[in-house]
Image (cartoon, rainbow, N blue to C red; front, side):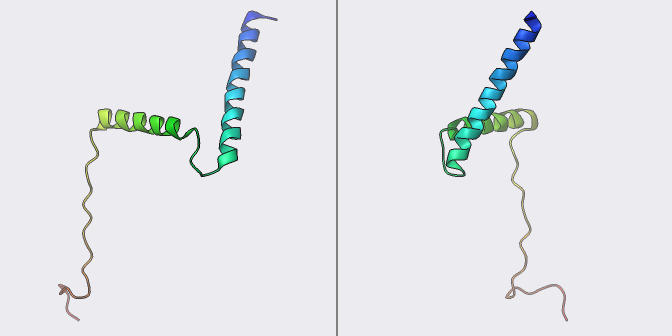
Length: 77
């Protein structure tokens, strides 16, 4: 077989094996905590760190409170 073709077949086999393994592991557990949670948390942590590096720490958004029924309103009927 050609050297580049052989390399392509090996890489494709590796990627498909990893993908199938991931789906088999997650299918057995469903939404329950599983062995892949630490990996997922690590990826999400790295993603958050990169976002904070480029865009700065996330600022809290203040939401205006709705007036309650006991509070006087500005409009009178």
